[in-house]
Amino acid sequence: MAASRRRLLTLLLLPFTFSRAALTNVTIDDTDLSYFAWTEDPSMGVSPTLPWAAASVASPCSYCSAQPQGNDGGANIHNQTWHDGADGSAGSLTFQGSAVYIFGIDLTNPANISFTLDKTAAGFHYYAGNERFIYNALFFSTQNLDPNSNHTVAWTLHSTPTNGTAALFDYAILTIDASSTSASPSASQTNPPPSANSKSKSKTGPIVGGVVGGLAAIALVTLALFFFRRRKQKPRDATPTDVHPFVADRAEATPPASASADAVTSPMSEKMLDVSWNNPTLLPTQPTTTTSPSVTSAPSELPSSAPPPSTAPLPAADNMSASGSSPSTRETRAPTTTTDSSARTQALEARLAQLEARMGDYLPPAYGDEEDGGRRD
Image (cartoon, rainbow, N blue to C red; front, side, top):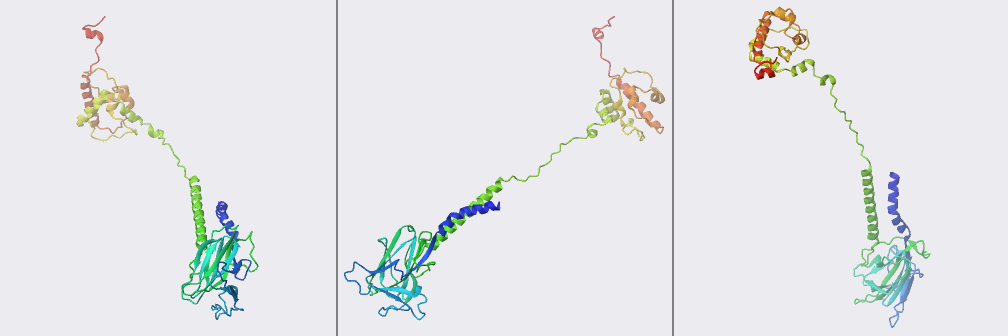
C-alpha cells in the first residue's frame, strides 16, 4: 500500500521535475562580448564621441559624471564592472533561452531607455526617483520565449526634457536549457535578484509558485480520491449473526393428561359443572388429602353417554366406592383416604341425586317405528 502511494506521487511530480531539471539561470557580465554588443544608434546623423564607457572599480571613467563605485569599493556592482552610455548610445544582447533579465544602476536624472525584442518594440525604462544610485535595478525582462531559438534584445538611450542622458548597464541573467546550451566562461549560475524600483517586474517567481502549487493540489486530490475508492472497495468486516430457531420443549408442548381430560368434556359434564357452581352448597367444605399429583374434578369424569334415568334408590356410600357408577369414574377418580369426612360423602350423594334428576330431561332418541305410532314386529 505504501509503495503504491509513493509510486503514484512520483508519477504525478515526474513531469514537473524533468521540466525544472533541464532549465537553469546563468549570469552574463557586461564585459562578455559574446552576448553583449555596445554600439551607437545607427539612425543618428552624428554618432556620439564616446558611445559607451567600459568602466570598473579598478579603472573608473574619468570623464563620466556618474561614479557608482562609491565608498564601499563597488561591493554592490556585479563583478565590479559596468557600461556607462550617453544620449544616442545603443546596445544589444543576443542569446538562446526562454527568459532574459537585464540589470543596471539607476541614478538621478537618467536617460530614457527604449527596448525592442526581436525587432519588436518591448517597452522602455526610466527612473523618476531621487535616489543617487540604486543597484541591481531591473531594466528589462521577458519570459516564455522559445528556448531553442536565438533572441535579441536591443536598446537605445534618449535624452529627456530634464537633460538626462546617462544610463549604467551592469549584467544580464538568462534562463537556458543547460543540456543543450553552454554559457560563456564569464557566465555563472545564479538567480535574478528582485528589484522594487523597476517598472518591469519579473514574473518567474509567481509562475513557478503557481505551477508547484497546482501540481501539489492535483497530487493531494488524486491521493484523496485513490484512498477513498480503496476504502469503499474493502469489504466491511461484519460479525455474522447466528440465528437459532426456537424449538419448543416436548415436555412443555405436550399438555398434561389432566389438562386434556378437562379440555374434552361431554354436554352432561358441562351441565354438571353448571350445577356445582350454581349450587355452592354441594361443594365440599373441608380439604381432601390425595395421593395423586393431579386431581381431576368429578364433573369432568362422567361418561359421555349416560344410561336412562332410574328411580331406584341410591346405593349407600360404601357400595358406590366398591362398584362405582361407571367404569370411567373408577379409572379417573382419585383415591380418597380414610380421613374423608361424612360431610364430603353427603355432598357427593346430594350431587348424584340432583344429577340423576336432571338426567330425566335427556331422553334417548326415538326410533323410526315409534315415530310412525307403533312398534314393528
